[in-house]
Amino acid sequence: MRVFSVIGASNSGKTTAIEAIIKELSRRGYSVGSVKEIHYEQFALDKAGTDTYRHRQAGSKLVAARGLYETDFLFGERLTMEKVLKFYDHDFVVLEGVTDFVAPKILCARTEDEIKERMDPTVFALSGLIALHTDQYEGLPAFDPLKDAEKLVDYIEAKVPPVLPNKPKESCGQCGSSCETMLADILNGKKNRSECKVDQGSVKLFIGDEEIKMVPFVKAILTGTVVGFVSNLKGYQKGKEITIKIHPDYR
Image (cartoon, rainbow, N blue to C red; front, top):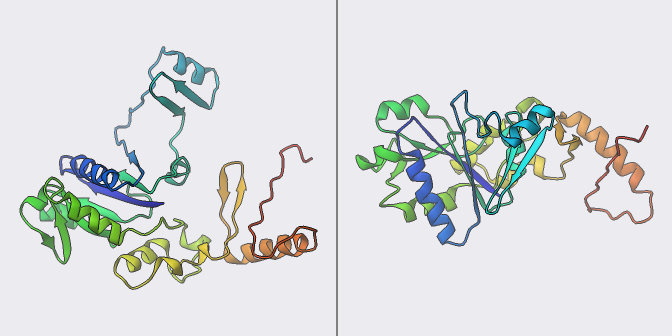
């Protein structure tokens, strides 16, 4: 799955760019999902007095509203992007306005000042209203989504790698840098996506749906303990993924 974010100030052309990108990706046969970041503090789809609202008020942690033509899931909390993306199994996921997740970014802007305000090493292209006046800024290409949607998606196909683990450096750092630095190096052609160490024989620990962060030393101990025990069991196959699930009633 490949994930990228379209960011920028209000009225800079983000949604117009995303519409064009989704249409062109879909035309090429890709499955596409999207996420819209809402910055309005009082935002809520569910309203007081509805049946679903009453379910939540009674204590339901997850409410599904199942209609004839759509199904909506209502969580009573703000989910991390890692949790949100677990619901997706698409070729591409386009994020609008998301800046707290390590993903390549297309920056939409109206002016060069807006570019300077929001520029970071993971921005790989420009779009939005600025593209009406220029086709590049300091080496970054600028695409008018209404006229150059095909060229923009060509560039997305070429530049956006499969999603990185998005781990803080203190919980990983196996490649010698943070995921953000790793991504910037990939976008600049200095590294390859395959150099991510987490994807090479990684071990993950979950309690419920929450991933427990582990430093490499702890990962090594856990891996050695589990593999050392399981390798003595009948049916063990070297190189195969090992999955262990412990029911909450184990004690």
